Length: 376
Image (cartoon, rainbow, N blue to C red; front, top):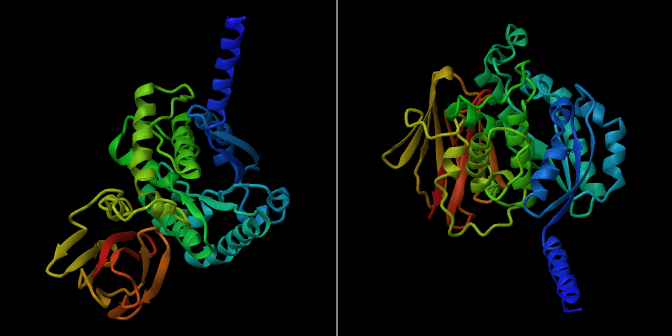
């Protein structure tokens, strides 16, 4: 009799342990980039390996755009409600197209989908799936729009446009493209692409799944034990990269940050979102009381001073092209100020802001630089 009682007690403890994990209902809206390797199932398996639970549904027709999702089953699924997170992935090339085309064919429909998430899901979160540049760029379209001709150009444009949609329409951003870029820069033995040089390999999808887990649950990817069948050394490297790119700077990607960052080390935040995903001292140099940015492709230097500041930050554009934007964020990633740098000198007024650390991004059409700006 005692053995039976002990067995029942042990089972109760196991059941209690199962119940301690977090639970999320996630809707995946996208196309083949989400469907290949069954990314939603990978996210579910990753979460389950650390005691968390994901219940998901998806709608991922091949090549589907945000515009098409606004009129197909996806909108009905969003409006049914009850989702904790709705993941939104645009067609893989469209956000990297020329600005006028993206403004007409992408941005309005992203806003419509995101607005529908918040209108129909109490406490729901819209989360954009930032994808990646193709392995060798998009040479065919690159003949018309040269930045697309290389991986770096295409990937930089995707980063810029997804960041714009997230900040403008109030969505979190899962930076899978940034994870891939870090891996491509530092681990050339990890093959992220399928044979077509566009879709993800199993390693690429695993990187995406770990990034989504970390962002959806606001948790480190390090305890993940699930491996879909890739080399374990590579799996651990991918988790390490997700830790660095996503979790260590999680407030930059989330629309609302749940973490107390008052004591955090922001050295990662102000370097991870440079276009190269690492500090490039030839591009960003601290000089005197300000910071210089070099944009070689525009033959332009931008200077921000003073830093630290007590009242305002002055931005000086020294070059032939004035095709830049400046966006100021707080340390939690909330957008505070924005202005077009269409004059040789522009000013960002910070007098009404509390002393602390802020993030200033300078964006061109093909590149982004982000620095730490201190208000005293």
